[in-house]
Amino acid sequence: MKNFLGKILMGSAYFACLVLNADISQPYASVRHLPQTPYYVQDGYVFNSLIASHQAAIVVDVESQDGGVARFVAQQLNNLPTVTTIYSVNAWSSPDPSQKHLYQRFLSNVVQEMTTEFIHTIRMSSLEAAESLNIRADFISLVGGNDQKGIYQDILAWYPHLTNNGVISGNNWNDVSVQSGVIKAAQVLDLIVQVSGNVWYFEKGK
Image (cartoon, rainbow, N blue to C red):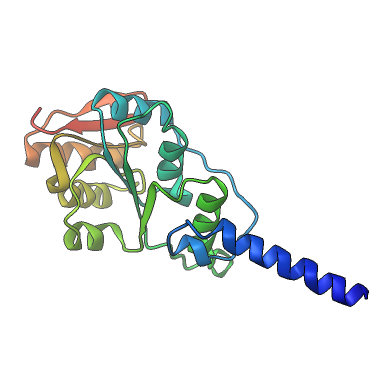
């Protein structure tokens, strides 16, 4: 009898899980959940302000740790009513064997944060995605690059994806290597670097 009741309970739990995930899109609907992990976005309030002031609808988060920027923006939607779509671009790979579940962990976190409707994952490297996709975005975050060459390449690759009123930004402005890459890209694109706290950004056409 106990075994029979146990099977009924397990079956009920499985059915409830199917119902719960019925309206969730793939790959979220099929992911096995891991314990929820927090994210941290340095100077997130600056990104929030830039998105709000430019009434951004399409947001692209490129290679932030744990998809933190995408997750942060999705959690702020009550204060950012113009945002309709968030793309999280990341290869989700690491040479560290202990980090082999990066993508699963991200998907699991988004499901548990109930923001699957807004965050669309693109499993590509930054440069691969910039070359392959035809996304036009109002706000692009490049917080993953922390060296001169990487941030320079990322800016040049993603700048064409900005809408006419778009903003492209990143953090770690206090890092000399990042500063060098950002300034070099600004010179090539004939743009003015603007800084708020530890965040740098360009406004297209300014």
